[in-house]
Image 1 (cartoon, each protein chain N blue to C red):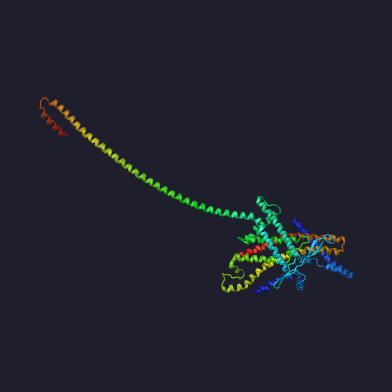
Image 2: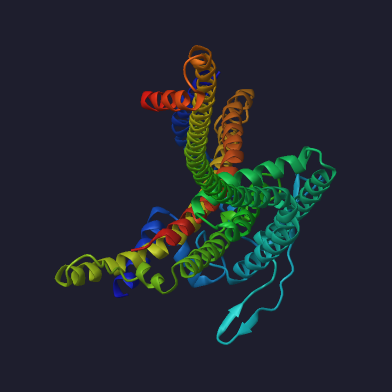
Length: 195
Length: 332
């Protein structure tokens, strides 16, 4: 503070020293009649303050808003637009993330469905094959059984025919020398032995 | 073009120096003659100070006159001084007070017309024209490219002060260039008041931006140094910082005052050379030719003064904005 007290007048007097009016100035102050170049006038300072306050008040209230109004409105609109764009971008990013998650979920679901479908098809195929095979087997079995029974019937038929034919043939052959019953028994015994 | 102009100026300067040198030689002869004739009233007339009363404040006002001479003086009314405690303040109008009123009135008139014009143009959705366009361009340029970049973020509230100071100073500066008028900004009381307002603006901006940290712009207290270093550095730096605070408005006031006063003294001194030549050449036809040189030079200086009027108001505003920006940014 003391340094300041010394420095301010020192600086001031430096500036004053540059002016050759310094001597005059001192004289003027002592006389208080003639104002010098560096005389500080309280009345003038007061008027400066009043005039500046008036200019500041009027310009700040009535002039600058009119001139800068459009610019400030544009600036505000720009700021708002930037804010909105930012918000929109955030919202879009959020939506995108949501949709991606949904797509991911759907894809998982689809995979699951496909896998399930494949498994079902697989099992159905196996079942059908099994079924087919079973039916085939059954058919074969039945065919075999039919063949067997047909064979048995045919053999029986054949046997009956053969017996009939043989008897007829034998009857014709032996008709003359042998009685019928004894010969029949002989032939039948022979045929049985053939089987 | 520029080179030719500089050459002409230089030639004018050389001529002027030659003439003054010749003149001083002639002056001795003249003096001898004058002593012989013992023409005391003429000598008193020659020694009359024409320059300082013109630059200094006074109780009289110059008005145009078409009778004897081109001007007449009127005495301004003297009001009784007001006493506030032990201080006495004289509010009666002086030359510079009247100039302040005229400049302030013109400023308000021009700005209000411009503001209304700009508003009407904006509302109609057409570009502003004429005076309104000139003022609008100035205001927009100063706000967007000078004040806001210097003051820093959220500097919107300092724009009206800086612009008001600019326009008030500009109108005062320009008014002084008209005949019969005087430059109120060529008075230290006016520039000091404006500088004090700027000082308050700067410090308030600092308090608002820094809060309790404002004390750091006075007491220099670096946090990253050891105490043994910090203490002596603080003892040295605090007065320096404090001095810096007051140097800024002091420089603002001095710069504006000195620039405006110096310009007028230069113009008046050059005009005075016309009469010096006339006397030296005993009012012969040659003196009329010789008068052309100082007239050309004072015209050049006058043109420079128009530029200086704009420049000084711009500098005052620019520096205020820069200082506000500096204190708002000064986080130690």
